[in-house]
Image (cartoon, rainbow, N blue to C red; front, side, top):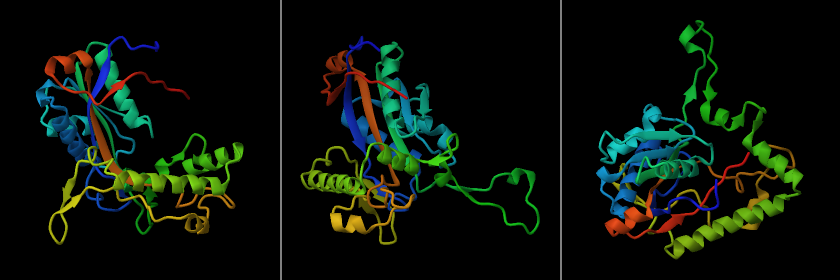
Length: 288
């Protein structure tokens, strides 16, 4: 792409759910449910009427619910967009949410849209266990093999390597020590706590009311962070994937549930409607 986009693109809103830990507060919410909540919050923040949105693009990696193949479409419909508004779900693995943003931007740059609702969503807790080959019948008395689709998805069948082993290989290649990994993880925990204590997430998190045995509960704080972590505690955790490796339960990326949504538009649309952008999309690139 050229260094300068042919049209100025702006973000009019950005909202997200708080993120739930694996089998945590959001375990009963599908990726579609989470995306709908974030989308409604983003539209409300943006000031853009639902019928003014021209396209919906959502990123989703592991399709874990029965309606997952319709995800972006259902997000649009459940967020109140007219049924004439097209939608598409994209998958660029961990970059799927970013891909949704750039795909939405392309819709605008090609002249097919003026306003696009974009985002990313995932429910890793709802990843099902599957039985392969059951359509051909199961032999009487034989226990079928049960496959964890989440674990399978985290292994690249082309190379035969789990993602964590890729991390181990990179650590060896670039001489990244276990201590350095733990220190970086601790820094992330501390940065999250400082931001949370300062209210930095208040404007971006859309509280979600969840049912519980004791009545409705408002979920508005990220559940996965462990801000009380310390270097000594992290150092005690054993490596998970490789003897004398660097990846542990304390310094690896979490298995989480959550969603985020943004509204992208041209700067001319924002000016015409008297809307205040919260940021600009200047450029992007993809490699590898």
